[in-house]
Image 1: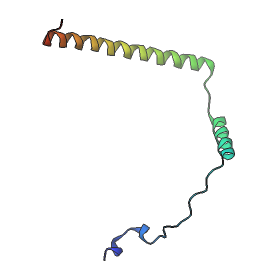
Image 2 (image 1 turned 90 degrees about the vertical axis):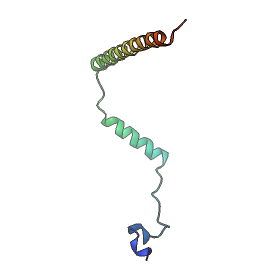
Image 3 (image 1 turned 180 degrees about the vertical axis):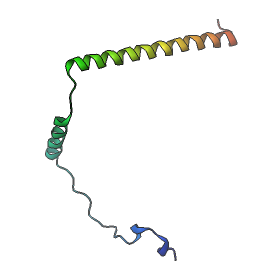
Image 4 (image 1 turned 180 degrees about the horizontal axis):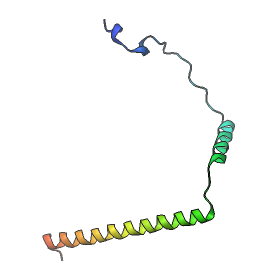
Length: 82
């Protein structure tokens, strides 16, 4: 029979209780508690991380712009541009 081949969920009633919703006040308190656990960077660390990220972004922009210029030139040579 098909009923015998079902998994564990076949025997469970469909009207089980759902998890209770968290109140906005409790959620806010939990968020604040989690933010207190964060190790925030010092000003020096923040500046160095920012410089590293900006440097990486500038390098990536240069690579993409260079590839774009090379590919544009190649397409124009192949298909003949104005």
